Length: 146
Image (cartoon, rainbow, N blue to C red; front, side, top):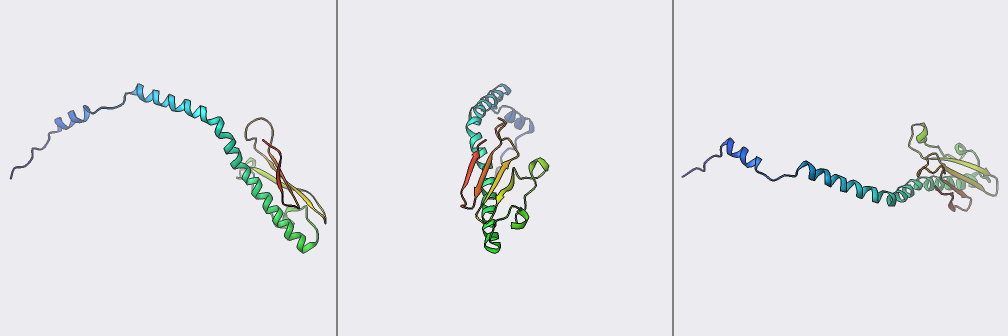
């Protein structure tokens, strides 16, 4: 039985060096085109990113609403103190935490309450901070959009 000839190292090197490849110029052109496409898409994606971040405010206000309802059933009134209803504010991003919204109960009595979530981050850099509110009806609305 004949054995196949083993390729020599010189022949292997020649085969590897003869392979087609992209030049540095071609790679740079591709990177520039990709960069331009990203710059064109970025303004369209910013509202989507902001919308995703506002979900945090909505979730916290929904939790405040649920806790306030439970507190009212037990005490026949709403509370302005977050710790009384069992809500614990997560550490804000300005303090090294992860929360982007500061939550507070603005007013509360036997008939109703008003809670507010205010952004501590200016999402689009225009100087306006996002503000969401809820009340005893459970409706969550954006009073100051960012």
